[in-house]
Image 1 (cartoon, rainbow, N blue to C red):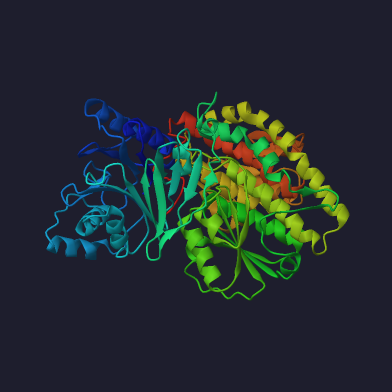
Image 2 (cartoon, helix red, strand yellow; image 1 turned 180 degrees about the vertical axis):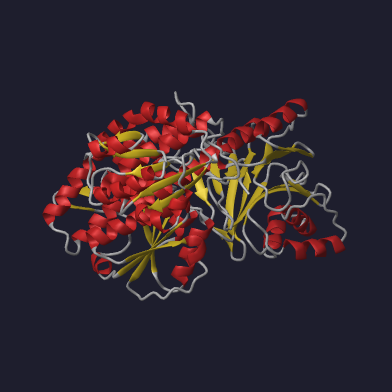
Length: 607
């Protein structure tokens, strides 16, 4: 499931819907469609990219001042015209677009078929459309409210009907929806980015809520308890956030934004007088924070790699034992936790289904939860007891870059904050803050490696396999570097702790399998050099990310990418840039769709 955009107002809906869908293309999808109301219901949909839908609409327009639209990522049923959204219920009584998965759709489908409803797709969504139609009498909101009570699973819905022109009804459970409010017009979307340019105020729907929108009125209703007073917030996107500027891809733009991102992540959070950091949204007092004797960090994908680095940071600076768990596994475990254990969820989108479920289960058991999140008003930001926003700005490229860097900066500050409450000395805290404040300028200098990285990529873009190797703080970066290459270039790559090579992976080394070593000067530098020697002795090509004037590395590696000297705990920040640039340049040479890699979505909102 992927993007939802709906509009009702005084303008033609079709171009606004298409503009909104275009802003959500970065999430990945395999079909698209729109439905509008203009006395009657008009539906246009097709498999493939949004360009296909635009061509269809140029030949067969969809007139009307209200409508819904969708970009679909196939779950139930393949990427076909018939399975594309919107879906109709009751022979055109309603049209529905849906994000999420309906777990009991097969049971509902049999019941509806017994009532005479005919199905024309393989999707679970068509069940929702027919179910709403079965309840439709004099009130579209009431029909949706009654229908969703029967749904098991997750859903974000937008519904229209020719019998109720100008009205859009939305419903949410586990899949995000946000209302956009303008002058005599309203929108509904799965992501606030789709509202840019059309709405300045937003309302974030909560689970089990239904909304009704018309050009001059909106309301939010609890599906069981009636109308609610919802909080209206300012939309924190700017039109420029969705503009590539002079960059050919959003990913490259976001890589080059990282010096400023780190500066924003630290802004207002440094307390130089006390040699510590401070955070406004943790919602835990000093006594509660001092009582923490164990931290569990849960995350997925790139955020999981940031969590692994967080483990090193918290243990080094705060001396608190840390465990890092894949959210997809942690949510199904019954892990023993005492009352002084805190669970931190890390997420870019704030909508990651597994991380959200893990945090909710943790809260259910009475544990305190914190979230590190980039999206204001997201599900995870609202579900946790307290948290920290990353302030990275909207990230459009599917492969996370600047949000990851912001996560590292915030985790470092949080580790210092907790450390200063325990045994971390004033002088140590002050030194760390000084080193952090120098990072934006250091990262700007690191970006100068771009051209050299591009040259190395030209030599290795034809590789079928790659190994990424690092130790200590740079082991998670080896995992992250390999993930970036896999995500956007489709080359198989694996990251390992360098010391584990001789325990199996060294069998993969040959002249056609490059190894990328993360080897700047630091505590484990000599050990990494020993591992590098082992690779070279077996004829494996070596790329090294290293400190300037490291003659030992230069004598052994086939290629060296130089990064500035920084303390061990900051090396993930400076090595992230060449790793991201290498993946980008390899993907570029291979002709891949860098911002929208195949089979991937920006927000993973289903299991």
